[in-house]
Length: 244
Image (spheres, helix red, strand yellow):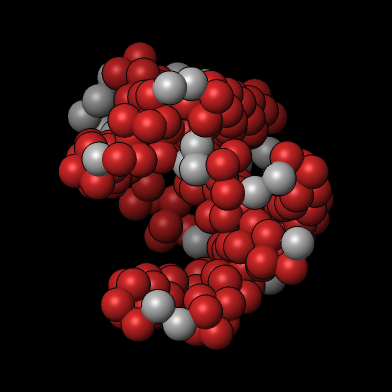
């Protein structure tokens, strides 16, 4: 297993496309799934701390008075996400982990505005709502015997749609459209949480050893779930924040 290319593992798992409910999990599966959620949790902690400390520091004045700096950070974020996803089979586990940590920290910097725009009570309330929703949908994705791959394709197309709508609304500045996008965004990432959980489970289910190839798959899975959580949190915050 140590000599197999990560892309071969992914293609094999995609070809089987079988839910793990009716199979016996291999010995490394529990360890790898724990790593998925530990890495995701660690990344969320880094993001939260980075956002809070930037919001409490004088750096926020530099950050929000320079649109160029903000755009640079956003571009770097996008580059890191696409880079980790596309190059995961070429990167070492250590490098991929460090890039994930870097992305989490930069994402915290760009999200620091939420501590300036929303009351801490609202942020805390929405965080716990997000955590509960995420846990519930993750449980459904993990335990269901229904193949969710078809739903995943529909959700991905819907995601492209709201990205386009969001860009359009930057110029339209319609509060009504913004709220519609937020509700649709919640539905999309609620569904993606279940779909991605099942996909990650299927990729790791037959791993006999927690070697570097499978650990990199677990890291990629944690990045995916991290993005689902963050986006779900942001859309819910826009909804509940507008009410409060």
